[in-house]
Length: 246
Image (cartoon, rainbow, N blue to C red; front, top):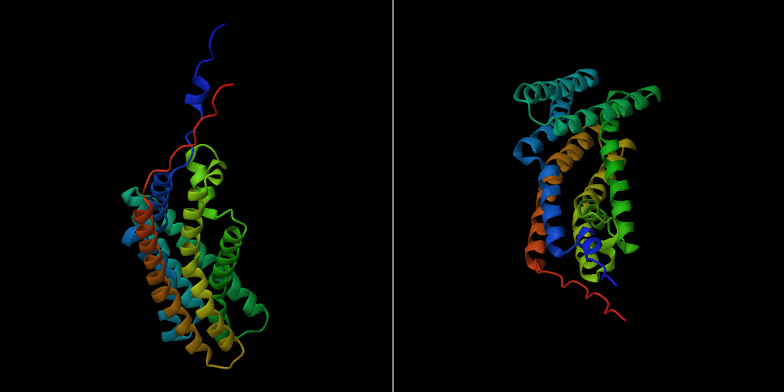
């Protein structure tokens, strides 16, 4: 009787290891940040909007200038035939900000109300992001693990190894920290401005500084901590021994 071959075993995707996690996170980090240029392009709309608004108090002009900044970045990317991913992220930021300013205007809000409304989507998105990632950790199915599964060939194999689950949980907590801190700091300031407890223009300035200045600093710090955790845990995971034949 012919012995079964090991072709099926060879064809089966290898289980995720710590090295798998490290390689995936480094790739995702590069794709997310996009280097200095990607960071600048992502910040363009908020910076231009805030500067123009504070200088002119013209909400329409602030939105137009922010949009033009994105347009210039897009043209440069197209001419250079490089990825436009980060420019589209910035364009989305302007578009959703515009929608919220229109909602505020239709509700009877003045220009200051509209300027403050421009920053609300970012706070809400960060809040949702924090809730989803935090819940994934509490349920012991950390979101980073699904990223690992998406590139390892088996979407759920990573969950069979406690060491991978533990590492992915740590990485997910670190990943959500900048957004969570942003919500905790920006949210109260935004509410104080919206309820006229503090001057709305002051609230716009503080939220923009927290979002564009502290926000990126926290994100870079988060990725740096992730790199440290990966370097600290970068040891192979011993594969599970195959069951002995009966």
